[in-house]
Length: 339
Length: 291
View 1: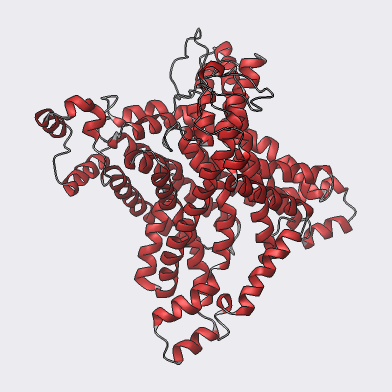
View 2: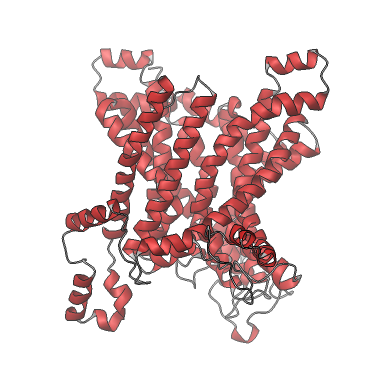
């Protein structure tokens, strides 16, 4: 009952937060001393007041700010995020096109960080001193300290330009025809269409940017897994399992690791939201046609509708993931009733 | 008064003790502190240490690889890369420190008010904080910088606006605990005004975790600033900023030195700052130590 009340309270809070995010997006986009007319019309045309007035009227920028926001909010409730000044298309269409590429990149990064980080953290938690512990510490420190854009550039220079092991930046080779769109994700779509060669090409193109994007998440997951393993191994039930004569690795894997993994699982949910937001720089380095690159182009050209659309979408994803994480944690651990 | 610990001689000695304990706790932390000190000295002494001026061009010798005359090579207009890397510390380090300091001050004030006042004010401020935290930080910083115009000052403002919410959250949590202490009740019963209680007794005793987090975040702030510069949203490209130098390397993949040396500078500084920050955190609260 308490859990149900907690879940309902969090779900009811979600639209309130989303409205707040929309206000924040609007404020960020509009209440700054910059004029999109200058950005779009160019210096010469922007000097002509008639042209500027027509531009502003066309895009509703001559109306009072509260009216602009209300129009935006009404549209939002109908799934309309306005029209992008640069692409001239509905923002929802642009986002629908771009979002899957970022999701695919984030999933690839998450998979890599879990596959490498969790075993490394587990091993380092069991053997608290020695090479594994040192490696875990080095991985977590370097993961949070390495500039992702620099790492991406170094990876391109080494693996693409010098060694020729990696393909050119981008989601697919230039000579490869994209698969028919089913999910929007290249690799699953190619597999579902039976185009395994395309799927492999997409996987090869995904490997390097996903590895680069995974560094921060890898560092934090390794550290957390090691920390929770150390704590879990001191629990009474682990001592009991050992006293019963169970083999060491049976105690570690079947008893300790499963419980140690629970907080890691919840953090993974939050990390996914962070990966979506953090993909901006990685996508720019690797010419990845996702949300991050779209956000950067929108910010550079003061495309208000696009900026707000990206902000809303990533915030929505983050809030939903955060809600799922908190509810899962409250369900698993009854001592926790946060909020 | 026992509550004003941060402001008494005992309190100052305690803080100094934390710092000494942090720096001597392990050889690694001490080495990291030396690295940070080295970067600070390089930044301060750049005009004496750098072999060339950061803007000095030599078109004839543009894009030359590392050599005895140019240890880190030259860039697209023949400027010495090593000199520009050294001068780059004079931009990155102050930006990291100032932007985090401003965010800590703003976050502490907001979180302090929220935790101290409680009730509707607390709810409103914390919901505002939640909204700011939900909005992607990098995108927020990008938008603010793009709108205000590229430049060091505007990047600092952007980072401050994007980061104060986490400090507000943390400060509010500790203020909620500190405000229930006996010495706070004593101050109130003596007739001390609420503002004075907040600023002279509550906040000085609630700020430790926020300051520790701030110390840990200086490295991250430097990374965010470099990211903004990499995206073209930082200072003008002629200035020796590490992020924009790395961005130049993107268009010259075979001139590996253009991006490598600024990146190594960034990496060594941020690793050292993170290690020092870890040491300070462990000294302040051993329970937080990564065992």
